[in-house]
Amino acid sequence: MPFAPGHKKHPDSGRKLGQKNRKTILKAKDVLFDKSINPVEEILKLMPELKPSERLDAWKFLMNYIEPKVKEQSNDEDAEESSEETQNILEIIPKL
View 1 (tube, rainbow, N blue to C red):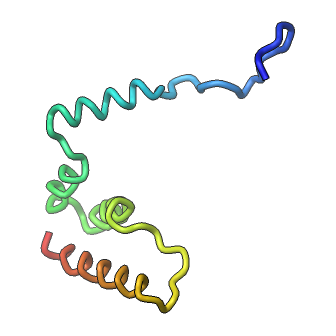
View 2 (view 1 turned 135 degrees about the horizontal axis):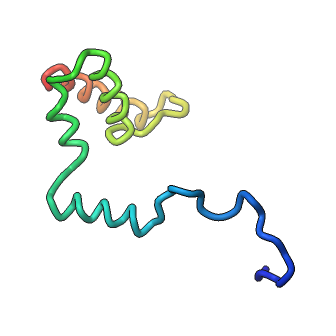
């Protein structure tokens, strides 16, 4: 429904002050890509300097990009494959 004259704008509508628009976000991604900066790799480089609690927080953050969140596991082959992948990742973590 198009805007009709005489109707007031809802106070909570539109982008909030300080919220970045899509162009700004895409521009930031382009700058990182142009400079060959991968945020995940940068976090991994900083891991040895972090305290154990900070390291755990960083790993929890990175797991969102490594392994999809599990909703419900069943006893099928897909669950077993996912479990093996998770085990392989957990074996790599102490080496970093």
